Image (cartoon, rainbow, N blue to C red; front, side, top):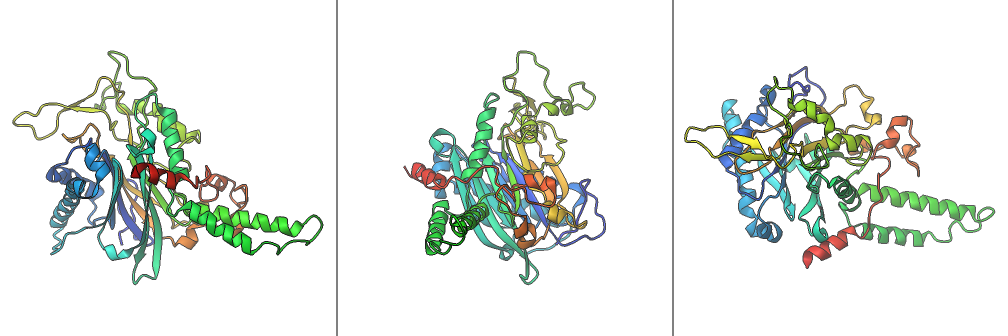
Amino acid sequence: MATSTGVDGTFPTMGPSTLDLLVLTFNCAKNLISPGVFASHLRSALAHGNATELPDLVVLSLQEIAPLSQAFIGDYFLKPYLARFDEAVNLAAADHHQQQRVVSATPPYTLVKAHNVGYTAMLLFARDPGRVRDLREAEVGFGAAEMGNKGAVGMRALYHVGDGERCTELTFVATHLAAMEWNLPRRNANWAAIMRGLTFEDPEAVLDEMRATEGEGEGEGEGEGEGGEGERLLRDEHHERLRRRLHDISVFRPSSHLFVAGDLNYRISTAPPPPKAAFPSVDPRSEHHHPAFFPLDQLTRERAAGRTLHGLTEPPVRFPPTYKYVVQPAAADDEDVRWKFAPHRWPSWTDRILYLDLPPWVRSRAEARIRVRAYDAMPVLRTSDHRPVFLRVEVPLVAPEELAPALGSWSRDGADVDDAGAAADPRLRLPVEIDPEARARGSWRRYY
């Protein structure tokens, strides 16, 4: 297990047992990456803050992973694109090992699972794949006819430590939301589609199961009290069980940590830039230094207004805009990629990683917290108009039963909790209801 660290990357005294996690998001622009180049930048991310240990898990959220035919046919045709990321991750990790004088006869990471829906893919790597158990997958497509030119992929698993007697539950979502400055309402609607339709079991099967249970209990409360009070209480109890069951298969499963990463496409304006507009600068001496533009960020505003990424937390964004770059022709002696911002798009922080913080009933324990070690952008790559963004965190190994609220904290309106601020926690109440038909509808459309 890794040593807990602060957001500045320093290493304090040993804290509680934690999972060292690296999440990275990258829009590949439908191009093959150079494994060596990508590995060289990823190596710097692995060593950020003078880290000496490799993360226990590495999760890649990839958008526009390949051209249309390869992405939608998948399997054999998609393998060359995914294999390059596998190679890059292990190249970077092996070089990090070499720097730390660690000798290993096997690749540092094993690709536990790769899954995609259309252009959007997720790759889950582990140092010790045996610790990753009970892996589940989910997907939802949106965009044209919900076919998946935009969409989301989910993975959920238990991560075991020691002899398997302790574990924590992790949920990851990789997504690509609607593009264009003016498409803000569509981006919010895409996120709502994820909350409604990205489920780790079939909601219709859950409903059938609960209907069968309700049928078995019919008549048990009849005639008890005036007006069939017992029957009403039985219906209420059944409704509450159904709500909890659907909550458990959603992205906001109460017993799980949650990380969302992707090209979320939120911009700093709802219209394209006018001619000669002042663009964000990476020069700290400039009056247009990029932090001055971040208050215009749509994601921050929409999240604060409760219209998107409900309940999620983002570390401070201190890196430059991650889109849209135009790569300049390479000179013979160029080592770094020369670039400029595309003149027809506002430079924006489209590529982001957020997480669901610990709930108040866990956070009240002083030693339990998610510690951010790094949240940064990698350099511009020649193959894409986006910059990769990575998040490295120490995740406390809180057992699923500790993360989930106590049964007494549940209520039909989601407000029956000790901490008034906890009422908005999506672990207690889903922001939107699950759509039972979303999974079947998406499968049918992608099949045809």
